Image 1 (cartoon, rainbow, N blue to C red):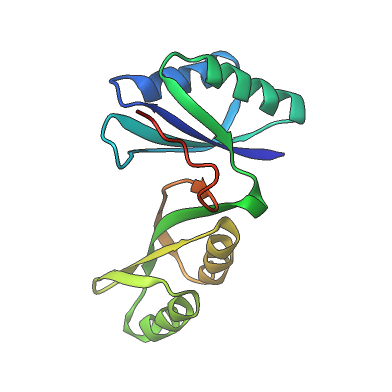
Image 2 (cartoon, rainbow, N blue to C red; image 1 turned 45 degrees about the vertical axis):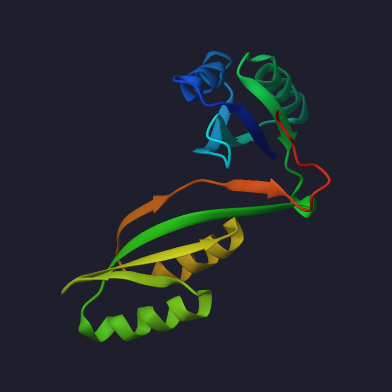
Length: 165
């Protein structure tokens, strides 16, 4: 079972390390972790996708909430949240293969961000199932490199916005 946690934390040195250390010390599994400053530079939003049974995921939430720099923690429920991930895929592509790869890319609205003689790099943003479907179609080609950002997300609507003075 996977759960996605959205944290608002003080933007202080070492906060990401402290959160990762909590997961490491307790042997929790992190599927992905993303972090970035919010509209207010005093705070950082950290999105953590973690796996485990219901008890472990509940324990993760409680342990993270106890950290001093954590201001707010929300569990992002799939039907009440928006999730996105970005991937960059470098594919071996000669001149004859480029048109085929571009056709696949257009179906998924992926962008071609670099083209060389023997390769091309594609960028795609979407939910995990969209990215997996795109990658599945590219497996017929040689994937030279792949980079994924991990999940980031927000709750839908404006009712659950955290305001900080």
